[in-house]
Length: 197
Image (tube, rainbow, N blue to C red; front, side, top):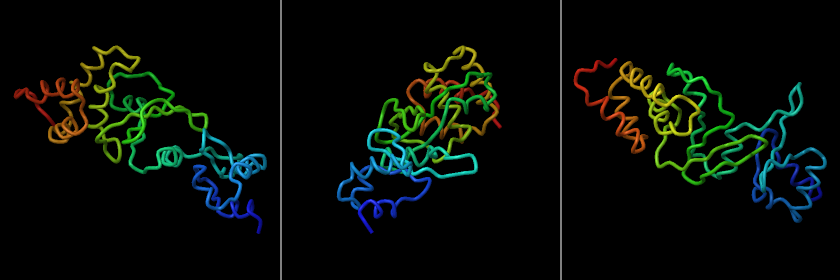
């Protein structure tokens, strides 16, 4: 088996690889990466990031966001979310956003990976999955970046807060709220007359 075949032998459909992942199997990694791209075995996603396409009845499936981000960060500790999820909270938000937000511990900024835009934001804490309480706090954290009527959104956030379990919301504010969110929710949570679910 020649060196190129050895590299091919270690590739799995649907996986995303860093250049360094494939280097141990090659004696001329850059040449082999070019050859594999020419053959369509690998697709370059960004600098040093490659995808082994998974073939379906409709052609090559794009890389899954989770695999893409995991390879890019070299870390499994991240949360994929989107401002589009706010629309499901019933806050009257209607805008659609063409980027995925990645909360993580390593990178910050906008990156295009595999033709898709990801906005990486470094955060000390984030949940394994976006809960309604987390998303409500996140709306306030990201309010300045939303293309919405901010005052209207805040009124709806306050209304929504009263339909949530107080303890779950308090925990989300404490764990995930920025300074603005903590200040905003403290007024709501400290109001003794308010009823919570």
